[in-house]
Image 1 (cartoon, chains in turn orange, blue):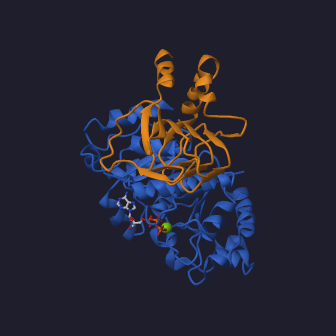
Image 2: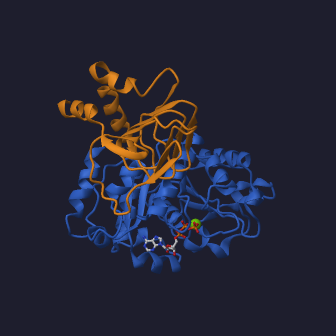
Image 3: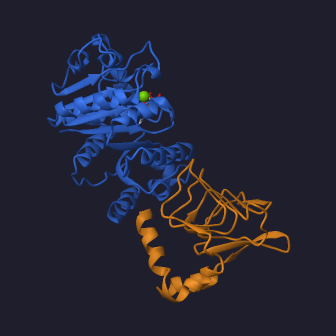
Amino acid sequence: MSQSKQEKSLVKFPGTGADDFEQYTDENTVLIQRTLRSGQTIRYNGNVVILGDVNPGAEVVAAGNCIVMGVLRGVVHAGASGNEDAAVIAFRLRPTQLRIANHITRAPEDENDTTFFPEIAKIKDGVVTIEMFSTFNDRQIRN
Amino acid sequence: MGEVIVVTSGKGGVGKTTTVANIGAGLAGLGHKVCLVDADIGLRNLDVVLGLENRIVYDITDVTAENCRLKQALIRDKRFNELLLLPAAQTKDKTAVSPEEMIKLCNELKEEFEFVIIDCPAGIELGFKNAVAGAESSIVLTTPEVSAVRDADRIIGLLEASEIFSPQLIINRLRPKMVRAGDMMGIEDIIDILAVDLLGVIPEDDQIVVTTNKGEPVVRDPRSMSGQAFRNTVKRLKGEEIPYMDLDESGFLTRLRKIFNRK
Ligand SMILES: Nc1ncnc2c1ncn2[C@@H]1O[C@H](COP(=O)(O)OP(=O)(O)OP(=O)(O)O)[C@@H](O)[C@H]1O
Ligand SMILES: [Mg+2]
């Protein structure tokens, strides 16, 4: 099932929309083509793109941005070496804890899985803010 | 050449031993040659659940230490001629057996049996490593609890690291009424996280406790819900397409069907 999820995200990727992601990835990007399960960690001194889910109990730590083409339920840390411009993007952003640089946030206690669209987390005016990742969403509707 | 299947869960007490006993008895009841291996050294249970405790002379550590031949340590079930048990040692600990010894043992057993089913201890340490060493496929067990599902997820990752891919999932102790009331994780919630194939759903059933205490697997009980669920699970393990049964009349079936069709 995660397989089909991954494939779906892959077909949406190429062509017209790819430049949306280009601003969040550069040559220093690692691609992880599987789901991270509880107890598994990815640490990378650059950007991390995951074609799968990040399950509860799994952890991603990136010096740069982190993009999850699936459900992000675990712990994520972007800009881990202090980059306040780093971002976290996920198809479904439901992290246990989300950190950017030295800002730490967690999901609200009354967790309702209300959002069913891709989102992006960034630091704006010193606060971690979460917004719809809209260009991506448009393309999803068209498909 | 038979298949070596490890039954594992990470979390303790979710029903591994119960499942091994019932799947083993179910397969033997259909005429297959089955060997059950109790790899929970130091916390031997499988013999008790099968009512065979008083027949043990040699155990798995006697075989690996070459105190006896493999055949001498195998105990034949009193109900099924084709069901044999290799019991664990009770007076030793997990270090009494090594992964290499387990691989050798499993290779020997699968020459002889169609199904070799290993009862894995709880945890992720040496006992787990021993139990999975000789296995080529796995059944991962969970209950509908967040902590059990989390541990199952961890185990699936560790199985992949041991090159045992595509585990099959059994959800044990499901209580449809609680799921309906939103007080328990449902099947879809669990599959959504674990993303593996479903092999069976076993309801919470007092009859399991009753039969286990008698040393009599519930799979032989024609009336109980859990017995039927285990019989269905056994058939699916053999590759048959068996629809999921209605664990209670509440639209539960429709949800199960949806999952089934999604494959
Ligand atoms: N579906 C069920 N309904 C009711 N009771 C159950 C069910 N499944 C298991 N049990 C009970 O739960 C207890 C634990 O089961 P079992 O010993 O099979 O678990 P286990 O995973 O092998 O435990 P351990 O990790 O200690 O080896 C037993 O008392 C058993 O009878
Ligand atoms: Mg047990």
